[in-house]
Amino acid sequence: LTEQQLMGICNLQQSSQQAEDALSQGMEALQQSLVDTLSSNCLGPSPSGVVADYMGQMAIAMGKLATLENFVHQADLLRQQTLQQLHRILTSRQAARALLVIHDYTTRLRALSSLWLARPKSDNQARYA
Image (cartoon, rainbow, N blue to C red; front, side, top):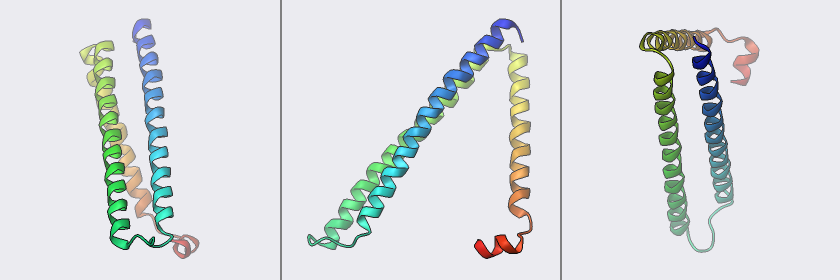
């Protein structure tokens, strides 16, 4: 990599990390809001009736679902923008090699995850599972 490419990649990494952190914070806030909503509705039906409570919960859930969809869309846009910027920084050959390395890494990570999930459980783990 040239000095300019290295600086471009470092800047891209930093800006992508900041955007990813913002998305993560938003997801955590959404999760906490959902937990708060569900826990407040677990107190039992209000005097106004079960149907009204159910409809209210459904409206809130639909709103949360729309927010979640927005987060997924933003994450996908971030992925696309990062790949486009990476393509501008690297030569075609460098970009191809990077994508092959990323593919190899994710393949190995999936294999490791499968092995971890398929491992024999110890007695202590079986009791608490």
